[in-house]
Image (cartoon, one colour):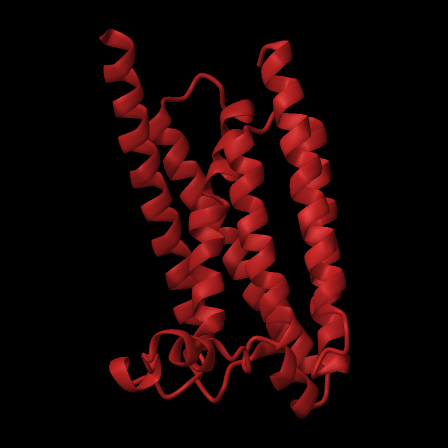
Length: 218
């Protein structure tokens, strides 16, 4: 990156971190489920620390910061309502008169599914930047494969972490944190959606890259 790009990225990073901090403060005001919220709040803190460490050792684009922030804000909202009780359906029904659960026949709160999907989609640029720095000689398509493998690995590790939480905590607290909502295939679906999000992110990246090459030739 040139000096101007680095300065612009740092400014973006500062705004993104400030936005995450502000959203976390607002979400922490009288949370409906304070005990479970603290566990989710800890995961938010760990994610931000990880993001800062990645930014320290790998050059990240502005888009990587922005999309990582979008994912984090979605997580912060989910954390406030411990995912299982995010009232998105009530909000959309009130604003647009649409009942998503009735429309699609959903029997559970689907907000956690959205966040797992956006894990793959929104964090794809960041993962790609890291892979590009580590595996410089590889082509873009091979880097996408590496990112998708990392996506699946991290999804699996997170689901194992949730299983460990379930083993160590009481059934009530474990359910509050994991948000399985009685679905025995919850972990499989979460990992699958993260992969689908990553694949979509890779496809978007390929399209944008092709468009960039065409524009440069003109």
